[in-house]
Length: 224
Image (tube, rainbow, N blue to C red; front, side, top):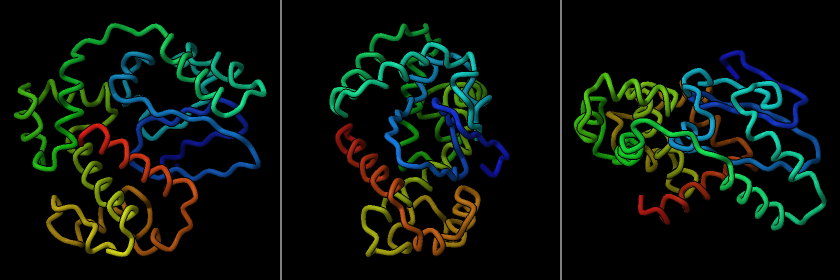
């Protein structure tokens, strides 16, 4: 990562909350992955998320992820992908959850961050009816970033998702309405992706393309 964090040769890779691109390569393999929501991070990991912002970690070496280590051996058998998926889901459902302070506020923040009308940290605090200092503390602990950066990242993700779903519209038709102009979008693109929108559009996307489409499908199912 641009942050300097790197990892190689481990079987259990953890990528913390990200505001920059991750570059990776792998040989022939089957890899399972899952994404923790902010509440999931708080309940299963229990360490402030900002400690892992833009960080790659070896889950076999980091005690914060010890309760998830048995999953590797569970999936290492020769079951079909469908059977492995069932095992993965059952394992995660059985992992004991920590008690999460401010659980309701974390869920409210998740909803508010997806609202296109929430465009500033002030808007966010007002929407969840909490003091701005409390909102910032919870955002750092559960989401990994400040409210301002989370909102910037959210408008960027909406833009890149729209481009992925409808590339024929090109970038000019995909830029989120929360951006003041195209120049602001390009600055954010460089900040989050380390390249220009044009450079990104020219890349092959065998992983991120399907992931973005699935993310959008899930958002529709959840009514967001």
